[in-house]
Length: 612
Ligand code: GCB
Image (cartoon, rainbow, N blue to C red; front, side, top):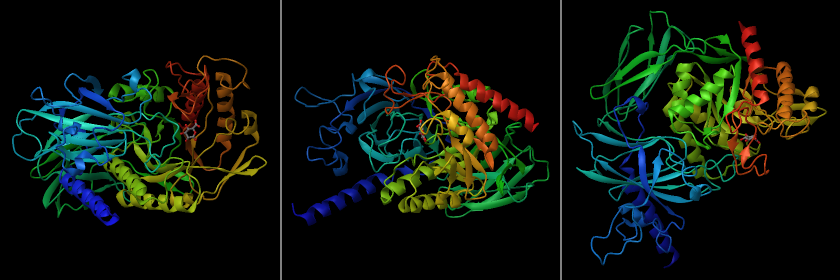
């Protein structure tokens, strides 16, 4: 085949795949958990496809790009009908895997596995009162999901931590239906995150899967919040997925009932004065109001807290009052069970430790966590920093990589824009100060601001060493964020904790400062003197010295040490100490608190008393 024909073939394939699948993709409606739905969680059939033999043919053309129908195309979920039929796979009789859940912790064979796994479940078509849409909704799949219903492709999603949905009303039939998902978690230089991180690349359908019957015209997005300029007003927008509609927003307790005319599925802004006194949401008083948003065909309830978050010079203001963020960073992992979190109990475990620490703020690192987290934080009164996995090195010049990052940011903001707990969107973590990175991050920040003007933007930046114990934060991206946040590891990656005494920080911008990370590794239960690495005493000494540094840090409005609990990382290979765990947790793998947990807890308790 000459180059021209192969180009044509490639273009045709791209067009074909897009046109075949695009019709099923739908914008994820916000707040899916409040909708009537059918859970597809449970034990699914699976097999491992190390050679991707059921996705590509022998010349590496994806089977589904030419319309499927090939004998060895797993998505068809076929089986031999007579003794001459040849099938080289079967879901019937295959092993079972729990959904939601990572595969690594479910089978020894899959502990280190990175590649393709085919999942199948058989589902009964739900009885739908009226014909409308039927959304197949995934909370998250790491990293890429190819979804097939009865052998037809519903669509593809990339990005391991955000929700997506397909309308499968036209793919499903009465009786039993086959739902097949090919999950691929291979790391990839151009993906977000890229191939190098400091966390475990848990693969699988890691969050809930549901079927959600929806009207054709539905409430896709809304934002309801306190007006930053006038705290007696509520402001926001509503957006239908299509067409024109009259949307009503009601809150009985606030005596609110307004009608908004939406046009052509476009967002329609509104602002409304509230006569009653508004009880503002805060960590001390996490008041949530019951709102109902309804159109002719659709209706959704939400519990929303009303608060403002702003900055003034070097101050951070919650409801116009200065606030200090007594924080901690967390990964989405259960250290005791050694797996990715996937249920409410996992989320509760994290917040239980957070509360015991006297913290009022959590950095959800380094990717969007399960929606349970912001929902729980709303009702528990915990403030949150949320971020996307733009981490360390990214393929900055690659447009597809940028689009992927922007999509993950959009999916996160669309999901959590009504969570009062979320006060910061973070664009990136520890990224190098190079021109192409600045272009990338500026575009992301502009997107975040376009979508949500009510929250603050940040990024975990690097510090620069000026010598003689002097450090500065001069990353040019700091000009584009509302807060200057940075990670620093004095006493761990640089020197020992005794150098912290002489450390001195300056900032280029007069903005509120957050120290987004500091920490030291310690094996729970290992005791020695305070200069012995990996001992609880060393970690504790570093915390004591760093907390003194925090007390003299200019413009400081909070910090989130690294990290609440030990977490798995392939970069950590010290036998007997790390054993593939990053040991910077304040809580050990066994769930026991290390010494530094209590040091931070006492520090936060004193801070709370001083504030009163
Ligand atoms: C960092 C990273 C975090 C790592 C941590 C460490 O700066 O942001 O992801 O896990 O350091 O332990 O080295």
